Amino acid sequence: MDIRDASSVTKGVSHILKKEGRIDVVVNNAGIATAGAIEEVAMKEVQNQFETNFFGAMRVCQAVLPQMRNQKSGCIINISSIGDVMGLPFQGAYSASKFAMEGMSEALRIEVKPFGIRVC
Image 1: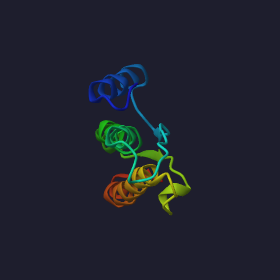
Image 2: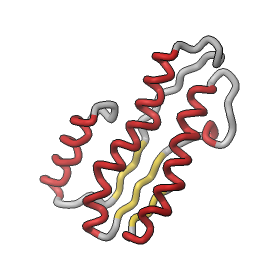
Image 3: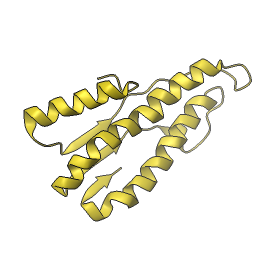
Image 4: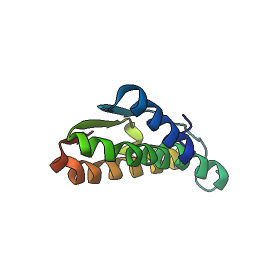
């Protein structure tokens, strides 16, 4: 599954649901790191990094949440790094993408708790 491609995510989740009938746990572990000074890193590289590290994880969450809500259970684990709590020199784009994932995860955890879904 290519998490940068919405149709790939939809197909992947549909395949799992057809085969297993439910999704209990999702681990968003895909990630890439772009190194370079903020003033020099190519915007295309930053966009690719966000597409993988943040938007990809969010796409997967959006794809599985309706099923988890129907089940009234589930767990989403978003893997991050030290780069989500402190800006890493020469990896500012990486840190920014991980800060974004952390913020999304914190909000999502509160939003879905009433449905029996855990996020960490």
